[in-house]
Image (cartoon, rainbow, N blue to C red; front, side, top):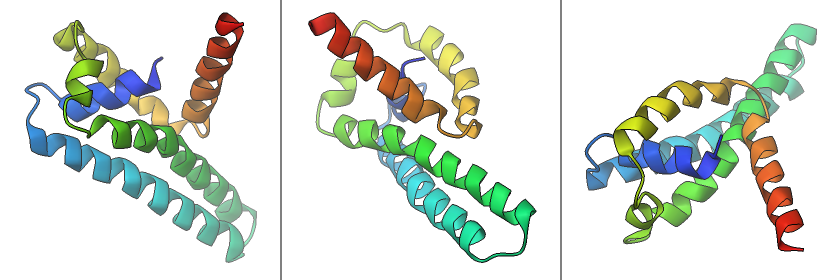
Length: 126
């Protein structure tokens, strides 16, 4: 799964209205800040193993939003989203990524996917 394409398709939506990209950027940034803050709070406040494990999971969700937010920050520049989606079959991409966006609940999956993509890029350029 391409995390950058997921962010782009989510920001564009079905009709590409300009305000949607800002709403989605806000969602991603809130996911990072809120997930990290709530996760750390749950881990550090004590209360036993259950809340701590839940806190680690929430922290992992917050970290999942980090690459999404990073890509979204680069895609709000004028014309960047349109360039990213040029030549993409948007209805098919929406169907594909609408289901796959729920993988965000798997802690650290999106950073791992980004790391794998980065490592693949390094290997292919050498």
